[in-house]
Length: 114
Image 1 (cartoon, rainbow, N blue to C red):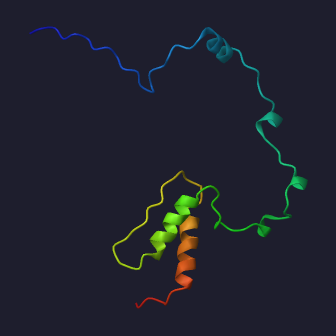
Image 2: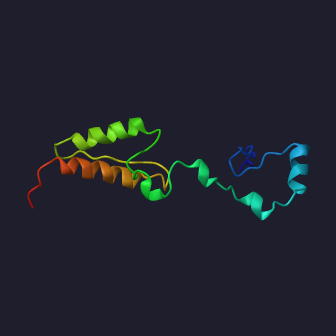
Image 3: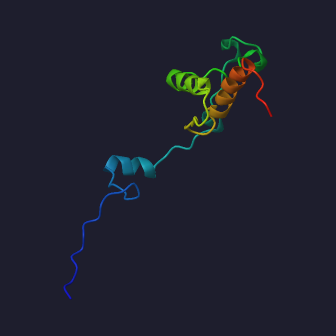
């Protein structure tokens, strides 16, 4: 049986790339951060509301006009067998946005039979 020739390793995300000397040096020497540097504080006087109760609900999704248009189209479909799928990172308001659109559409339609 012939000996198998070793195949060259392919680089993957787990394969480290040799860093430049400057990068290695900066990793070894570091300056500890103070607790104040770990937190960014907002100036309340710069905000144009007194409490968060004055803010609009989750109905506004900034920068997602195409996604909202697609959801509105999906909600407008009145035939069975159509579905919508919302994909994105956790915590960006997908569920709240879809629910708000569905509630708004349901308010303008007759109550379905049970």
